[in-house]
Image 1: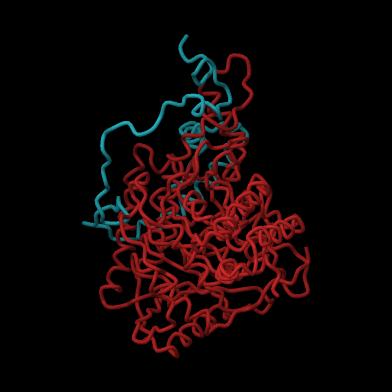
Image 2 (image 1 turned 90 degrees about the vertical axis):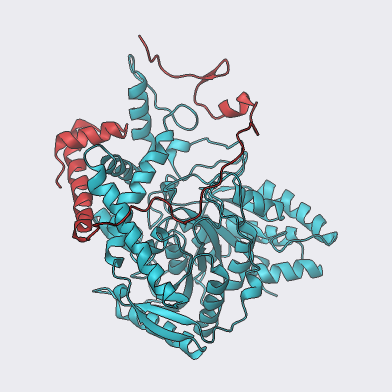
Length: 95
Length: 495
């Protein structure tokens, strides 16, 4: 599977990473190369094999549905690059 | 008497309990060693004040006779562990300035046992790398050098700061994390012991996530006994990690009997790779002979899907990483790009992530986004998960046939030079994980034990892979191998 410049642009956007137009060809080459390496997986007969979704066969525990923590918005906001009036602040989203 | 920073955990513990030494003395010896070793760049953020406070508290506790094994033991903590009030950046620019309001379960456990934190240790950015060269803090330099050369070598990665700090006696032991080999490969490169426990043995809570179905924390220590002691303090059930196993923690140190008579050790033929250096072949054969001399039975086995482990890993790990790293958006913590006039929220995300993530992290996040995207999910991600099932099944079959543990080389080569792989294709770097990555995919415990030196005087390691939850047995086999190999070399101090 080879990735062209348009696909590279699309993947970068999907990943929300800005890539300069002039770097897209190089990126497409790198991604194609890595995907080429993954093509080896096509040699494996996976007919009837379940995909592995859990590493250990144990059932995930469920916790009780109750509040056990919280009530400290100042701690939640302490590391924010921009926090105002108890909220995370971001550029305007809706016009 | 041995310099205090060179003590093993076991010797320090015994000395502390007898009142022959104090935690503060050991801590001060480590601090001097760290201050003298800036050339290695192993510590990204020293916490000497915290260390001295905790050492004094540990001494008070020991004086009262209340001293768990790790009490008063100075440790280095990989930067991937969140530590309350102390920078925790995963060696990434995107987390610059992040000081967590909480403490990871592993570091909290060590702290409550009285262990002393000397500082945070350098690593590859978000644990993505095998040479420590992707770190935003700059690479760690290995304390080891080739004979007759002063070329700077890698300590391996991603837990390269941990490996260098233990090898250079800048702490008594360190925490590491291992997603594809990030504890075992650097341990092998620096002549120390590194354990990747069974998936679920150590809580992942508060460890900055890379690939959640593969990540495990473990100890990096000078010897197997220390690994057993420290692992015991790190693991145990944690309600805050839903994949944490609710199993009793055995006394790992007590399991070190040195008796492995009748144990069956498998030698997988698929790990004999084309172009593998002869000295690694020999090391492996010597290791098998040592276990046989100790009374184990050596059995040739086959793990037929081994060669597909690396491509499967490089689908699954980036897929999980792209999802985990979606949280770095410039909103809740860390770096936010300076925005231009009229930039909206999408530009904020895209610029922040372009500035904050290094090249390798960007590459993996994009690969992950691609293999998870509509139209490619089945062809890549789902197929890789099915191959993962087959890789795990390979191990289940040999264990069901009576194999107790598996012996392999830890790495395909000794440490390479910093910068030597700079122009190489990223896949060449990925090949470092070829012997270790199967263990993460199958969720098994693995340990790297230093076993010899190569022709240039650099350490080489052997890996033992155990049955799920059989760390006690695995550590005992590793203990036998360690004693038989008699590896005592240390890097000659040049820094």
